[in-house]
Image (cartoon, rainbow, N blue to C red; front, side, top):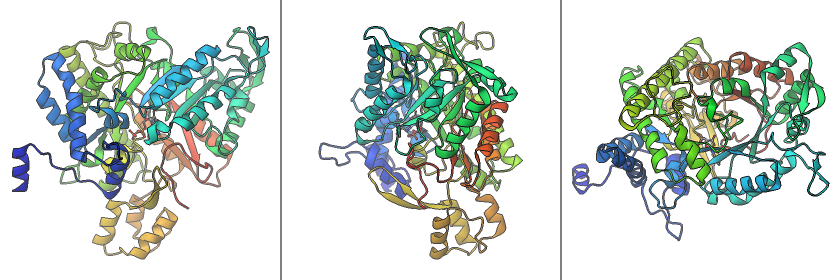
Length: 581
Ligand code: ADP
């Protein structure tokens, strides 16, 4: 009855949220008044976002109200969520942009560097993350003609960006996240590789070495390769590729950094080579972009795409993909870009990144262990379906709204009649939106079966995986003592009172061998136009040689990059997930 009355009054049903979800929404997403009190409910937030994003349809003469309803429904049923900045900023009238991902160029001049710093600040204010390639900066010790001085090099400038980010903290919503890339042939590469080896330095940065094919070949042959001064284009030194590679592995072993981006593989898939070369990715690596390009992401919650009989509901997924592509394409039109340069290139390419979350939950519900060939097959099948249907949706939009302006001259121009978007798919980490949706993040395995979650402001939330809790109760082995024991260990693999088949299904990130992590990343990458966010977890007692095998495997399997996390090796992490030991 209440439902009927609400409907008559035009009041939306509130979504069914977990305690953690509500906590996160209240703290950071729901609008607040001057006193810091929430002035909207989750349903009102989804309505605000749906209405702001649907308004783009007006321009194309399509049914705005219908679009708004389907956007609202998909979000409030937690079937689809856009990246955080869209939830933060859409329809608030703040003029803050709605994309999660940016890449800014860094020019080799004081003026250029500090312009980029300012631009970074403007982006961080909106909750977006920025990637930079510092390779154009002259190396340390090089001359500075105007002052007759000595250049201090990329790493010293990275410190300024890091400090500025500390101060900005995205208006208290989230601390900033940045990616620093340096080409492996830059003369300061060794300093860069070790730049995060001490604790609490450059904490707002993930760093990645841009490894070229030439370098990877030299590593395999144990040969020397050239370092080039970007200012002069001259070879200044030779290094042994294997030695540099080993240094990278040692440091990745010690601190998780540097990761690697396989920059030539990325550029082989650059959809608009005539518009420029890709030099960097966004902070978590899933979105390679041209200088000044931005991209907005969105993710479909696979755990909500299952039929009553426990099968994947492909029809429902198809509808969700078409609806989400429509949504993300609209964001491009209504997005108030922080800079004119970003506005221009973003609208020329119209990149969007649709992906998935809740993959691990899906596997559990389908009784498939994450580290199995069945899981790889399913992952690849899902990625292929997403790519195919997202491209279909983009082609349909192109017919109604026009192709993306850089289409001719793009790699699609002889493969497609016309697309609305230069890229359509990306696998994001979904660090926060998966908490809102109450599902496992991205394509990651469960982090733990029960754990303490840290959120901004020092609060900690106790969490038991709801699927596990239900099975434990159904099968009669649930007890509070057991749950506490699990939270302490994180893993259930050695807890004998839990049935063997349950343990096999509830494998966590650290139970799974690193090779399976890479294989899953590669399975999704095979059918993803942008890149795949994935952390390869390694046990604490693994060696730099183990990491070497993983990085090489990722290269051979045509991943676009790779990041590892050896248990216990990182102090504080950029993203706010963490095991409490
Ligand atoms: P969310 O779940 O909040 O939408 P994701 O965890 O999926 O975000 O991350 C997607 C991208 O959003 C990252 O690669 C990065 O570009 C950006 N991002 C994530 N967290 C932050 C942060 N704390 N500050 C700035 N940008 C961020």
